[in-house]
Length: 262
Image (tube, rainbow, N blue to C red; front, top):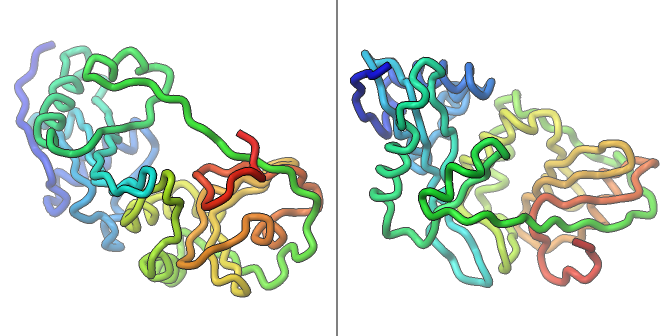
């Protein structure tokens, strides 16, 4: 089926198009961006590129403008995400055309990147993308002495908690100078609201917010939000439970990494 379509981009303030975008995202990924928008976290850094038919979003690829720290240098990057096509309009090259438009619009950035599932590993190399394996750091843990001692659980569904998280992260995130992202507060709030709403904790003694989850014997730490240095082992004493024997990091740790295995 061949269909006429119109290119639209950066239309977050167009309620009709935004609602259509949300409908498509909900049907494809089970996520809805409206609350993120209403809380004021959908900023100029997240830009949907869409094709529409009769004011209905039928295909999309979004741009996230990201500052990435690599070996102590800040690089301007574009993360591509929310790539989706309405099933009725697939196999017409719409995603390919959107990718071409984005690559041209941001040809002056340092690099593009995305996280791809196994179903599309043959698609993105057509645009010059290479496959890179992620490095993950882990360490053994010998038990918790301060588990839940003064720990405050925050909710990604609570307005006051979200304000506290955003204000805390806005003070300046202490990040690795080897590999990390900066100035991504609004994107962080998306993850707090939609991915980790029940896995956010504040440690008053350390003045640190941690996104983490205990699964079996493993403590998964997804992010640490603070403006000062910290020790993973000390933080884990508040977060790990009595069964925890392993800590798995989902980011690059700060400083000396010899205590970790990869």
